[in-house]
Amino acid sequence: MEGDLIKTYPMLTPLSWMYGLATGIRNFMFETGVLKSKSYDVPIINIGNLTAGGTGKTPHTEYLIRLLQDSNQVAVLSRGYKRKSKGFILADATMPMSKIGDEPYQMKHKFPKIHMAVDKNRCHGIEKLISPAIKPEVDVILLDDAYQYRYVQPGVNILLMDYHRLVYYDKLLPAGRLRESAKGKNRADVVIVTKCPTYITPMDKRGIERSLCLETWQRLFFTTYRYDEAYKVTDKSVTLSFDELKNKEIVLVSGIASPEQLEYDLKKQGINFTSIHYSDHHNFTSADIKLIRQKAEGKIILMTEKDAARTDGLFGEDIEKIYALPIEVEFMGDKEDVEFNNIIKSYISKNSRNSILLKKK
Image 1 (spheres, rainbow, N blue to C red):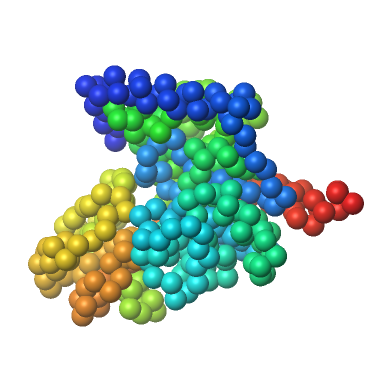
Image 2: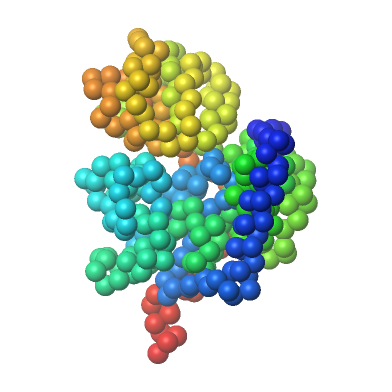
């Protein structure tokens, strides 16, 4: 059911009060203009969350890339979490994962035509991306995980929240996993409840909508995960369907914040596996690789694409055993995807760089 993965630590509540005071003062300073948010002459869409990790930002960013890339030059700007570099970097196909981070590496390799950039300072990153030096010229920038980076004012603010960890059940860090008060949802233009079970009912949706107490102008959507065929990381043309995976001995290796939905979905398909789970964005060590090899003797290794990116070059000959499982999002309900797509496309059409220039003239 909704909220079933929430685990809080009541003993840490006093620390959460202090954390909440600090984030509340910061948000108040932005809302009163003491701290300034900057807008830019290019459409900017932010995909973020209130919860620390695990809401599905990468699959939803990839959804937007697929939606827009045929008619727009898309740029994605990420912090590049846990990368071993600093400053602004515009990725190319030859750049190692360690230099840009696992999620940017994954997106650049899946969508080679996009501009994939990393910069902790999002304002600086945007200014670099819209400079004349960047060719082809950027039509739209997708900000990955910048909901709390309030120095940028996005044109569309998309807030993701995990169905299994809805914000009204959670607590502020460190007692829970909220990065800021649940009131932060009021900054969102679009709220998406992610990782929904396929059996969610209209009544369930209405209950969540009432509990969220959204403003009338905010739009609420629900998405679930859809899985493509697993592919061999050394040869993407070699694939395994779910039916074929049922007949394999599998070790599932995950380094994501919330693997429970993935594990549930695989079990529901009748796939048996041994699970080895690490923390989100885990950097695999030689000891980890040794353990995985031992567990996977005579078996195949199944990973998410993000995890497969982090193990690139670590497994030697055993890389032939590794299959990556692509995860995509699917909107639930009648024409939800059409409505969401129209919101995004309409915003970009009305705020394109060309239209902005015409207005200025």
